Image (cartoon, rainbow, N blue to C red; front, top):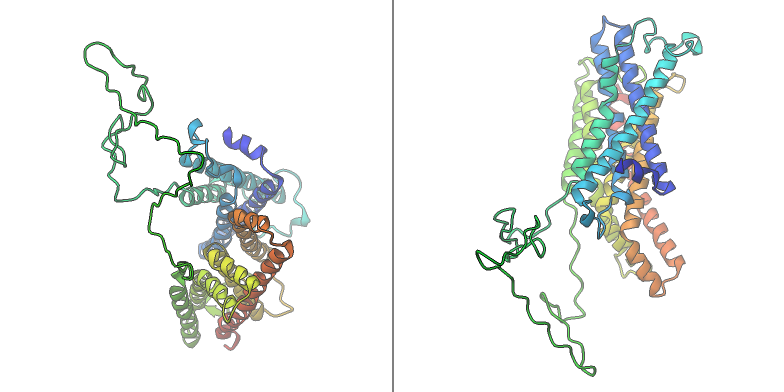
Length: 450
């Protein structure tokens, strides 16, 4: 109920992102139901039905990835001061976010079921004059348990992924002593926890039997004189050299692994092209001219781009600050370095999807007709990845809202902030667009010259 109330009272932009999650869930659920219909209509070819079900893993992964990104940017489930006092700690907020994601995905799955039943003719007459009967199995009764099981895949996977992503993390120092019990033991700081004046369960101080244990409170410190200068309390090491540059930000460690996985994917594709006597694997749209090793190479290439995205974004920020940068390039480069992990990974996934789509268009003939399910799956994957990138950009903007407000208070004009944002976007496009085209050409090379 609390998740429903928070959903109703959210900002329209948040509601729009949740609606997009429901639409993506509806598309993925419809693809799963069409796979079930194909299996019912072709009982003599279980391998083809299993292959169609395996191809649905890509839209499913894209939908779950988008749902997690939307849950991360939801302001209603962000920990805020005072919420723990009413029982809304990090764990409860994580559960609310997972429930909200499950509600949005369930709504999309129910819409997919209604549309699938409408196309089959179970609700009304079958539209399109029965043109889609091949993957709908209109003449066979629909097994409801199997359909509901397939429709439950998206909500369950998305909610579990959100719960694992937003789970509370222990930020206390590991060197501090742990608590030796739950009821009135010692805390991490070494002092006895009283859980309030009278204890956690309302135990009052007893006057008879034994003396009450009353903790001594330290006397208040004397107030300084009016003409005294304020003194600062030093809690850590202080760098007294103002000319020393600040400590460098941590570089993302995924760039070497991403390059290695990317090279392995290209090598697998080249090896699969040499072993041309292997059986072909049917791809969406009816293309069956490539061996299964090419698909494995494409998967490794996509993973390599996703792993290398944060490192490439961090490198782009460093290049912006090279060779005596001004204030504009310095601001744009520092923001890219700070947001490398948050922006780089969705950007790498978008580049992987773009390279795969470019390679697929190079394989198909211009006159060849692509099936409706292939078009739906392609639009679903591309739309989810682009929406995830835009959502990550919104999350990055929310994260640096305090810094932007401080710059505005210091007198920075709005044109400088807009110019820095345009410079960041231009630098990312200048780096990732040629990289995507080169990788797409290398990925399509094994099948284009068979």
